[in-house]
Image 1 (tube, rainbow, N blue to C red):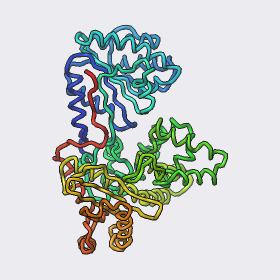
Image 2: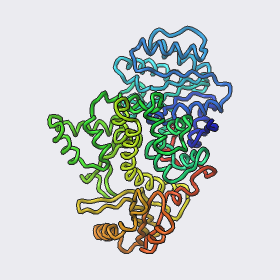
Image 3: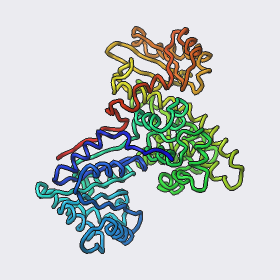
Image 4: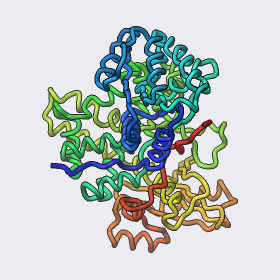
Length: 504
């Protein structure tokens, strides 16, 4: 049987939230982040540290008012809430206020559903309740926590100036993916954190703790790639078989597939690439591509447009990527194979998904390396303290540099190439020298800096490392870049924005 699973990462957020809940006065906390990122678990951990506080947790359904009220009844029974049950959204808001005044902590999960037109009235009723509690903050010992996974809709409910609850939140937590050090600690606790395993799992799950725990509970966290894929996605009881459809794509209801699936299969594509694809497969939708991209970026935050290092904000040389590794891996490598499980041999489908994932891991390695550089710099680990975000560089003249890291204090710039296979690096260095030359020609201010060239792969054997270093390059693999980040290292770095208290 698998060993006990711990709470990994988020120690700063946990301490901060525990302090808010424990201080014995009114609070209204907003916690947002993608689904499965650990919002509810963070609240559970904080409440477990706070003894004697009665708790009501309600998961808001995507339903009409009657459905929400009915769900609230069921949760009130489960948490043994005394008193009458609400019969309307207005009564539910009042019930919440009464409980908070009595010292309860009330948590409303999937709060973004109150953005639906049929449920919008609840926010006005809750505004009146919250204003009353805030007016008597010193005498109120409980508080309200709202959790949500759709950033744009949470912002519309709580940050839009025209929204009833605008400026009512006292504290805000934005949960991003777990830092890589926490992922390494998980693997150290439960299996061998080999470089290939780290890249495979991080490219598939990124920093979503629930997915790693699912692997652990299925007993495959340390197993070979294809066994992990089969158990997690292709069996009738696989915990992630319907994950993307249920928790990502159902919000889209089949819209935007034209754009989303293309970007997943072509990370780093340009606007022209996307338009060309639309023109070839669905010319009638070509004029809608711009709108699709805007909605997927701003409302759903499923894609991002990145510019090369040193680019001006108005420069058009941007590239599109799926923001979330799991969604990208699902769309680019797994979804079609999983859908055919009743019609084709299982081993063939798993092998096909694994092959496609290996192709996607080239881009995944670049992202992993950039984040490792940033995380090591934040933790004062390693030899390259950054003074700027790590970016890549590309232009229209066939110049491609995967890693551009800058240290202004010492006037040092590090330019790196990443390869999925370490054996391919030595034969690629001459070509990369050309990229470096063109980069320095384009940015002459860096010619008199110390220019370091680095070649990076998941794993490097001693002979390959010697060959790379003999060419004047630094040689790095994932063991080098994760050294000091695992269990026992200080948990002071996070990839997402710092959880912050706003107001009091």
